[in-house]
Length: 161
Image 1 (cartoon, rainbow, N blue to C red):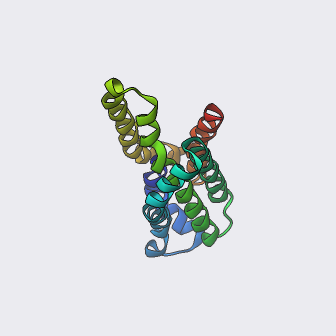
Image 2: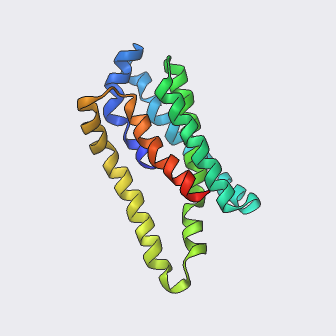
């Protein structure tokens, strides 16, 4: 889910061209996602305390997949932004509970290593997004990046169900 924030950066000029928007306007593709995650991260952590971590995580993955598909099929710039907001909602649900799940699953003795592995995976996702986008955009349209970020989410959903 973290990858989805950075994977769009290289696609911004292509998105701007396709929707005939300015670079200032197309920056909302990144801002809408980031702002939604930032605004909802704490409340979603609290929600997981109320309804359970697994239900929160699976809900987040579901919203993330739905948002990705909205972006993939977006016929207008406003629909793309809506998709990014829905993706941000999903990411906030997942990120808000991710570390809590790691802490609750691993015994005290293994927790530091587990949290380190989780944090490393997040960093790799964030750093790998633009690299992956660069490769994909050489061969495919910008829409494919939303399929690429949805695919691991679909796997995670079925693995977590």
